[in-house]
Image 1 (cartoon, rainbow, N blue to C red):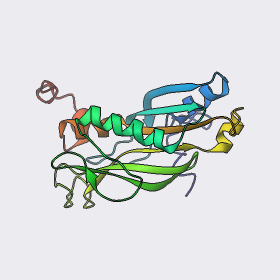
Image 2: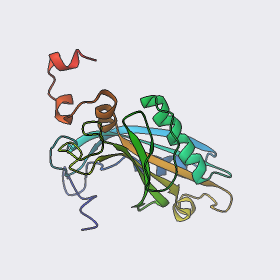
Image 3: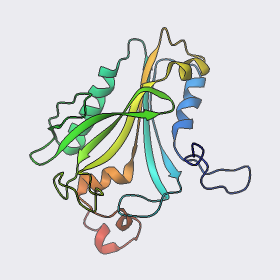
Image 4: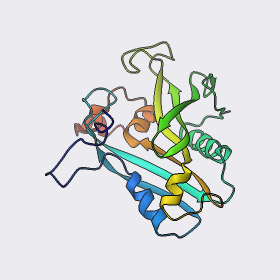
Length: 204
């Protein structure tokens, strides 16, 4: 089961369509030019079933910062500002699965999670804009929609890339562009982005 997440769409026995844009981060780290502040956008492919919030092909944006004296507070502050600029929300974020102000009718939360290359790791959720957090088809009854995953770059990842983890630390995050678009413009079905309906596209 651990391999299923990565082994998805093969062109042939040697070529696999990428499931995430994380390899771009590793290649930048291996160049050894420090400090690092980077954004890696690109199309990715996963064996997801098509529904209102999932697609086997979508676009991902990953970011990473590596420098001296980088802490989890830098990660939270960066993502807090990102949410504020994108949604116009004055947020107060804490690393606990509690509810915090987002806008008059939305909230955000950080919750502990697991990702192979970061420790500690977290996911950032926003309360569902369709049901206000009560639970509906769009949020699969949970009241929350995950918008990104993040965490501190694992010391072993730094070391494998030729970076001294005792001197440098960093954080990374990744988000699906389509999911952010759904939230930004309150679109209730991702499939509408791919249908090329001119009546829908002209709204933006």
